[in-house]
Length: 222
Image 1 (cartoon, rainbow, N blue to C red):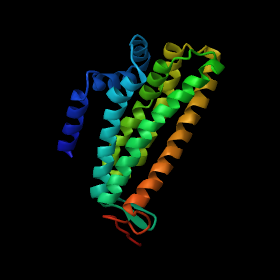
Image 2: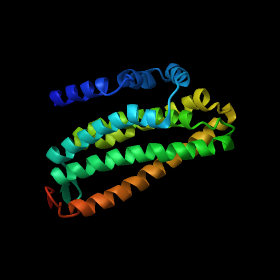
Image 3: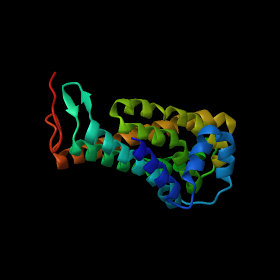
Image 4: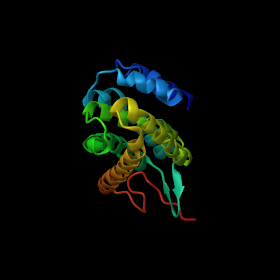
């Protein structure tokens, strides 16, 4: 476990020019100040995805692979365990995160003018991606599948981060923030679950997963 954690932080620290650890720390511990820093940065949709979202998604996927591939989790009548389950959870997490951020960015930007906000794709991806940080960090807990649900709850803090970021990044009027936030979060959640369901179905078919486990999976009636 210790070796895994060391590799995680080494990878994040050295994955690209942006110091991801500082961004994660700033956005979580000092969000108001960090959003102002973000507002002063020049970036692109592809830049944020490749420099921030993908590295964190990879680590979450690695955690899922290790957790479900080697430790597993009991779910009702069967056990989610084995290499196939590890691959499934890793791929679903990675693709769902990337696609969700991209699609949500386009929708959030498209809705901007409806809430008196600035229509700017680059600002929109910053808002979506950095507000997504608690969820991405929480995914690390998938290395112990029983704690995965707790990691998902980290995402709730992202709602607060999103609210704080609307002013600096999207110039959203104070009286429009709540409505824009609610609509945006609903979009994010719906997109994530739809994408996850689609990818899961594809992976289940490829790996032969299901009630009887498939390749490397197992069933544990109790």
